[in-house]
Image (cartoon, rainbow, N blue to C red; front, side, top):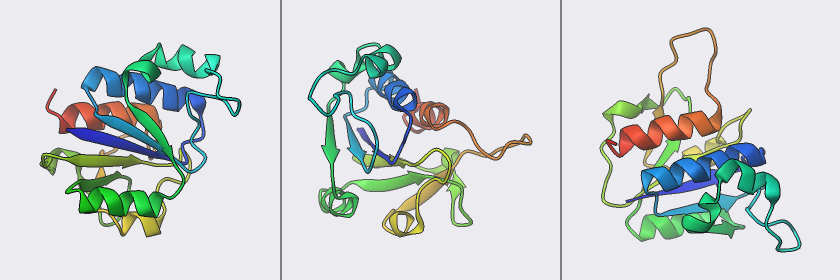
Length: 154
């Protein structure tokens, strides 16, 4: 069972794409934190741009918006969740070397600056997808798909 936490992911298209991939991979829940856009606008109406990217996955994947990421991480940890952060860091390990526990939460961060140190310190493991080309990173929605499918052995 895997849950996703999208923290400060700015692009509605990236978030919608992650919803679609999460649905395909069978993710349990998606927590949206920070300024990550939700499937609903500020008036509670469905966002057409979100729906276009998610293709309706926002209706099939359980999600919630959380205001306090630190509290959420504490609650998940108390609930027995393994906390993984997908981030490049001197402390990261190859994402292929991690074994999932029964309950795992995967944190994905802001497109340009990633996950901040204070959040990384609260995680059990920082995982990284190795880069072999000239570019230093992947788009967050692409990285989410690669990590989900590998971690879940799909």
